[in-house]
Amino acid sequence: MHKRLGEILVAEGIIDAAQLQEALSSCAASGARLGEHLVEQKRCDEAQIVGALAKQLGIPIATLSPEISVPDSVLAYLPAELARARCLMPMGFTADGALELVLADPTDMDLLDEVRFQTGCALAPRVGPTSALTAAIARHYPLAAVEISPPSPQPGLAQDLEARVSALEAEIEAIKAALAGINAG
Image (cartoon, rainbow, N blue to C red; front, top):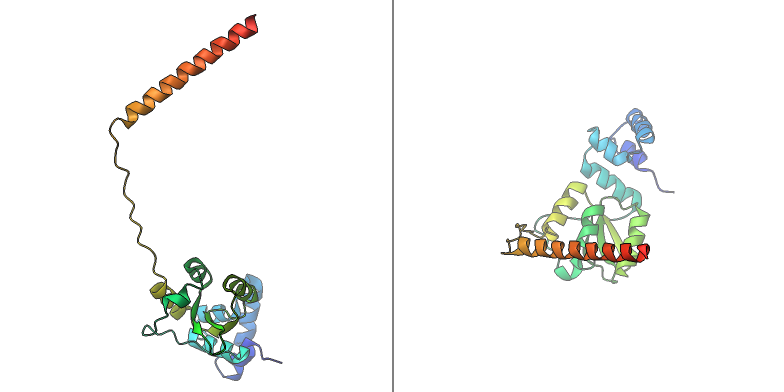
């Protein structure tokens, strides 16, 4: 049986049993995830949580340094919107053809199923720190520059619209008159 994240952190001396109990109580009340809560409370850092998750799940820790470049052909497997929204990124393929996928939360089975369905690939999950993963996603999936400029005014457009409105109003009046004549007769 796998040890729980909190048990691993206590066993490694990162937090003590009392800190774990306090964190578990807080998480139960707020719905927060244990690792995120411990980092937020400065009981440990991201790297310690990532290391404990890797140990707990038996998966490798991903290296997400700025020197690493992921080919566009690999990035194409995962839409940028999904990568940004769910904090995950494809890195390459294993020797047996599985898509290496770095996640901040490799325990999210619904997300893994969604990616497996969208890509049609077997997955080889890796765990990575949220901050490094967010930076890597920003580097590899840059936001498209969107230039918003006001529409250029078209000469005569206002006059054309006024003429159309007047014509429609005249049609409406003609229809009303015709209906009044029918109802009177």
